[in-house]
Image 1: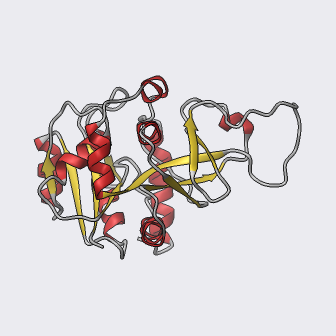
Image 2 (image 1 turned 60 degrees about the horizontal axis):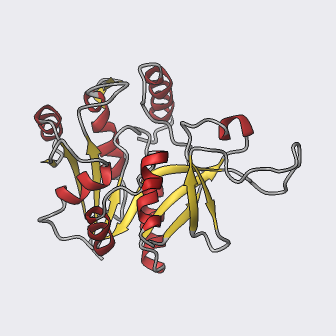
Length: 250
């Protein structure tokens, strides 16, 4: 099954415009993401889907592939679909463009999960042990069935705990990690659908997939996503990258 990775990288950002080109430890952010993804053994091809020629030029400058896409897409998924319109792919991995510490092993695990199951989509989630973190609307939570199929995603802390202070023997809250793998036919079906009411309310594009009856398998992982959303995130990310470089991990 031909597997293609796509990194959506638009110029506009309410908190950090042009962050794809933000310099992190001497390289643009998008280059860190691209180089991390290149180490994934399961990807047959990798490209950046962008709406800006400056980003496309930067990607070409470090030897990557970039595809120019429309600036009016409502989500990264729609941008990914346009970038792939003329390319062969059976499985498509949508990789966040603001996570320079992306682990190639996570991509490989998602691809392996998709190949051995029949889910329309596959994504990932990590335990979220701190209830205070779970209460933050900026952190997306997911609840799953026993077999790992996603039931719902929300910015609210789900599930709700009726009896305050009750303790549990296993993780209650799971933080959704924003990486998606789609089967090509489902991706094409998904982007033909308009954003549903739940997606508009929560601002979570994966709710469109659930709304149309799609099955989403969730890989449980301990990957700690560290992205760049604001200028305040840059020192933390640079520190983590220096530690990784010192350890010889990339």
